Length: 303
Figure 1 (tube, one colour):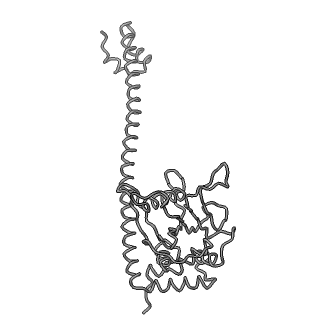
Figure 2 (figure 1 turned 180 degrees about the vertical axis):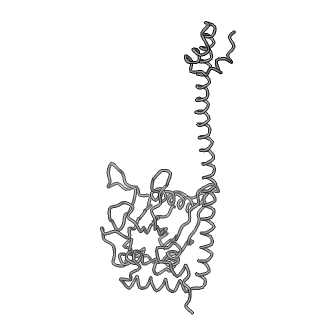
Figure 3 (figure 1 turned 90 degrees about the vertical axis):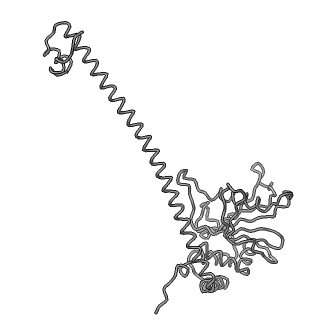
């Protein structure tokens, strides 16, 4: 009997879960960092994969895919970003300020009470993006703080943010990084390095512990989606109720205004009819003059 393909079997490297599992293979992760930064790294240590940082109870927690430190105490956060998130209410893209928040939370988590600011470690926040956020076709966009009045002056805060555009065509990257981009985009093996990555993925998918972990991950993601759906539904109901009340109030005001005008006009006709009756005009003539019916005129009492 043919084995049914599970959700884990269908995953590619662009999936958060599988990306994390591959980056947990030290040789692969270390090689990627060395190729990206053009430097040799003696060794790396995993601080905690997929770590959630909540610095304050009321703060917005962040879930990190992979967080690493090397022997020089430089810290790295590697993230896979498949979609370009946007705030539906404002229409603004979220990725730039997401990196700002990540950096702030990493620094706050890193600096212990009583430590000086210069004890903050150098950091690299690295996003693997399956889209070109800046629309300039660069393979890598590297950001450091510089003085606008003199771009040669750099603020040496040792914080670097890198966006890796897997679709890029400009700028030099090593052959292994380009082959990794090709593999992420199309699952195509074009080098010994991506062959190693592909073989590692097969090994990961056959690991029972990983399969069990993925089942737990799927259930957690489903719970989060259900919670988000429930919250969205509650917010939608609340907003709908508020809009309904506002519309009801507006409709009530409009109806009240219309009724008030109608009543005022009717009272004016009645007053005119009274004056004409007191002058001795016939009921029929008064009805014609005021657009009232004969019956209505006959019910009017002259004081």
